Image 1 (spheres, helix red, strand yellow):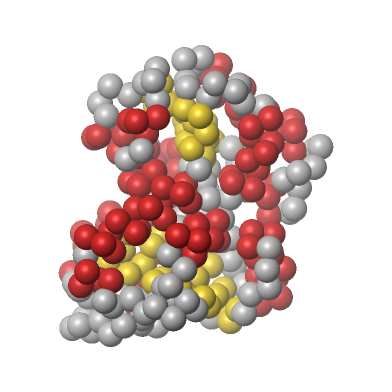
Image 2: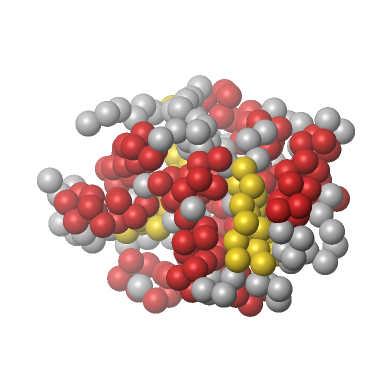
Length: 282
């Protein structure tokens, strides 16, 4: 059943399984401050990285449907795992039935598009969650655009807990940050570019830089995804017209409001107004 034949004007929806998508939202608001945004964090069911494709798809589709119901004409999956495991299925199989006038975009393709101009050795590393690495989404997307680039991935299962437990700048984080970087560079010493393929990782950036050789370029996602969104809205004026521009930002969480507000302050460095909602099976 179609939700709406023609979407009315509404905020840009931003979805993540947890808090990492707030780093993407922050860059959106820096580059495109005039737009309204509605952020939805499925914090009660995070992390998605260790879940199966089927579960991630179901949870992500629930979130997209809810954001559509709340008036979002455009939804950004600001989550690498959701982008890797659910985006294509939602775009190809669900949008035609939900509402063919609305759009859902991810964060992997915009990140990949910049890689060809950055790497000189054509050896690229990927540091991400287990789910994103196992999905092979980054190598597949890079291969489509740049067949000559070799991609080597390493999962970093402890980096997200370090961030969410406010340990990103602690001495205890040093061992785990160095461990995964060393593992990656041992796999391929010719790497000159590393993609930080998780939206939490910008909060570890100082530590990551500390243990990464200075000649290696680190690629964080927020900058490239926000530029891509700006370009997308320019190229699709019909969608731009459907996006409210009152510079407002609201937050939804499937967890407790207090917990979200406390954790969000680590990412945004400000107090936020947040409401609690539920996402149910259908």
